[in-house]
Image (cartoon, rainbow, N blue to C red; front, side, top):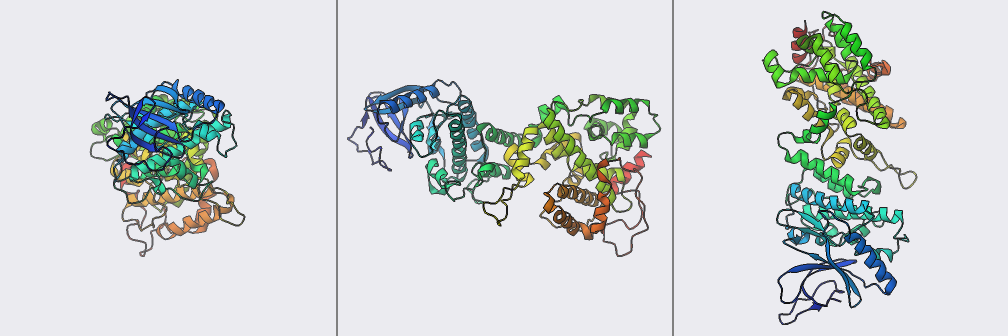
Length: 613
């Protein structure tokens, strides 16, 4: 047994004392928890250092020792670049150990400065550790006591995990009551490893251990359900922490067990998504989608696209309005036409100086009937790569989005172009649609994180779920709205349009628009919030609709009755009437910035309408 191994703090080494553990010279204690300890060692007469990882408590009897040896050898057989191979597994004076070659690495514990490490560096290190952990878990092996000193980091930023299964016997002897050989025990151990890595992430970013406790096991024991403490990153840290990374780390140690990451792959995907979006300065969140967009397009054509294509082929060129209404039945086709005509090449050649194209009518006028046919032909047939469950979810979402467009038409003030209003309402959902299509499993995970949890006691309020944005950060590493904006920017839409397709934040007040672009944004936001309110639990729907009326009543001059009438159109999603809505001139006291008489449309709507005629 190494000297002082059982004490909480190692005594200072005496200059004349040489501490030995069998043939190993003990150089320094690298770390110690309630379950394991790690020492830097060397053979006398050599400068080559190794790391010994031992259980904190000695297995008593041959059977526990045999189980320990079998478990650690099973972990040592795994071959992965982020799992350190054991140089030796043995027993000395009844104490089992696993030895690892340190090479040029130091423990993560030795590399964490007081101000913490930069977020991108932390995420890159953790991602490698998670890849190794996921491989081990899928092989039926766990760590059981993941600590900052079990992660070896070399000078190139490479990570190797040491100590797999060293703490297995300690876990088998605790009060869990689980057979260490059962599938349930393996799953529980894997979840504990992921939670422990979340605690390590917290320590590495904050520069200080969570709850001022360096042993992740002791921190876990103080978190629900065993304890009542909460572990969240402090708002003030030595290094700035991006909002999405903060959401990921806080979810990994969330006080609600159901909200935490259940496996290493899920946490790894979130960190990988954030890293891609953060480190690709040109593409940002689009980096998450680049390959998928090329392979599967933005959205698949809706069912019945073949019949629609035949109808398009038989139409006459002069019937642009009727053709536009057919195109608007399918958001995928409408979006593809907008993409075609807003690319830098097409805009430079055909619409230089006229700004982005925001109506299907104008797009049809630019590309002609042949262009519409080409757009229809490049769409992936429904449902693209989705399985049946994913296709059903996407179809439901498209139905909700089209209904939001219809509500926006009903709520728009007089004079605004119906097609522009409809398309802005659709584009405010571009991120949701893209995520549902390209990340169907992650989209389901986001919805689960948003659900409230039943209260522990009757009469208490339910535990709230995450906001959609926080859930997206925690699952994808990027916000849903940012993903939609990245796709729209990739199409060639300018900053004024990108502003319109960002919904008003729910916590921000709605001010009187001072231009037509802002009015379009307000109308679309109101429509989308209305449809979101309908998706609330039945007991909350009326309250949600009332909140929409309160937010937008003054700016849009609407009442609860107006909102109900806007919803009475039902979910049929008929294409919008393309002509501007007409009405008597507004009274002189109408809010500034809002059109006071019938006009061809907003600033951008008017330009599109003129071009379409």
